[in-house]
Amino acid sequence: MAADFIRSHDCIPTFKGQYGFPRYICISFNEEVVHGIPSERRLKEGDIIKLDIGATYRGWVGDAAMSFAVGQVSPQAQKLLYVTRQANLLAIAQMRPGQHLHDISAAIHHIAEKNGLAVVIGYSGHGIGRKNHEDPHVPNNRQAGRGVQLRKGRCLAIEPMLNLGKAEVKVQADGWTFITTDGKLSAHFEHTAVVTDGKPEILTLP
Image (tube, rainbow, N blue to C red):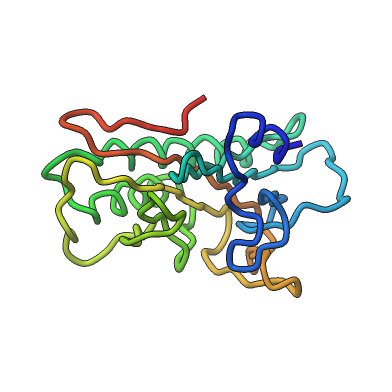
């Protein structure tokens, strides 16, 4: 369904075959952090589902992810979804001329820490343009120094991944799906945005 929809808008599904990924989009359940492979697994009440989707239009890539509650979820899960979404938006708000790359990382880490959530380390946002993953890497955890200065035209995919429990993750036997080591819930929000003269523009909003 996702591939048909993307193609109906004169776009190409970006993820299929990227680094060998076998499907058109990523679907991750609950303790699965990122890169879940779509399967016959059924949804159930209380699940958190993460959809990560890339589309290429006339040679330019857009990358976005959202996390959704299936039916009624626990208050802890609701908080996780809310804070992770806010982390994404607060981080994007740092994308102004004169700010620095690691100001984005600090914004994510600060709101996670403030709310008792763990930041997944080792997975980051990224530059984006003609390719889905371009320089620079945009860490989700606080860094030493402020990093390179942002300038108009810089396009980044900002994607905080926050966990209810520990920060550590491990890869499953499929070689793609990363899960929390303690089996607790994880959430993921991502938008592609660009630095302008003033307020950053989010390119992947509905």
